[in-house]
Every structure is written in C-alpha cells, then in structure tokens.
Image (cartoon, rainbow, N blue to C red; front, top):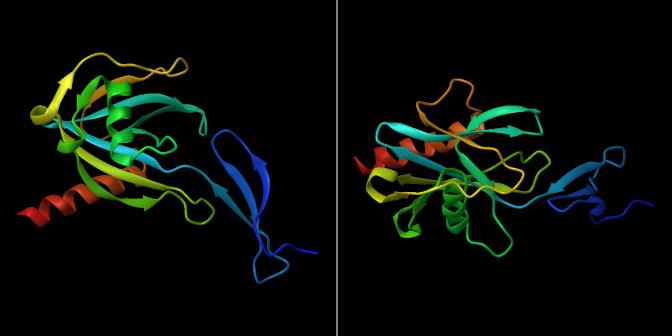
Length: 168
C-alpha cells in the first residue's frame, strides 16, 4: 500500500531525498529537501568578483559568483555577506547589500531557492584575507563574466539589470 505522505528515502548532513505520492500510482516522484543558498554578485569597479573552485557534482573546476549554503537559522543576507568574506576576503555591512530576488534551483525535484544579492565593493567593501574551510581551495578572479557561466548564475545578473533599469 502506497503512503499518501512523503517518505524519507535517504538523509545526509546536507539534504534529504523523499519519495512523494502522485495521483498516478505508476509514477513515484522524488523530492530533494535541501537548504536555501545565496549568491553574492559583487562588483569591484568595472569587474565582477568571481571565484574558481572544484565542484564535486560535476567533478571539475568552476568559475562562479560567490555562492554558499544558508546555515540553519541564518538570514539570507547574513549568509551572503559571510560567504563573500570567507571566500574572497571582502567584508561588507549587510545594510549596504541589495537583495535582488530569488529563484528555485530546480523545481522539478528540489525544494530550495537561490537568493541573489548585489554589492558595490568600491563603495562598501573592506579587503582582508580569505577565511576558507579546510576542504576549500578557492581562487578569487576579478573580471568579466565567462561565457560558460551557468544559466542559474546569469539569472542573478538579469535580476540586477532589471533592478538597475527600474531606478533609471
């Protein structure tokens, strides 16, 4: 007999995989319950502040905006500022950070959202040293956006452009 409620199939320190009932008894949906994430779009002059790090899901080095998981009980804006400082050494006051909006990362089977923020480091940043976790090796890159930037990351740029155009 099928359950009418989601059933936990796997629990990891980061996410849970749930089996979810559907109206069609021949189809069993899967839901991944994961924490929300943040992306900080940081500009330093004409350049974006990007990071290059190994991403194990695709097993390759990857260039992206500063991105990280929101800790339990942490506000998204605080997580964005924390990740920026840890990964790049740039310290900013959350009061100077602009919230751009959020998107679901993959609503076909994931529950989490990506929250996007923007900061102008020339106006509001203080540079110090990276504070990486023991397993992180992150190279900070200042420059233009690479062509291979994933669509989800570019969503944040489009949110930023829309906000900028609204002010004009």
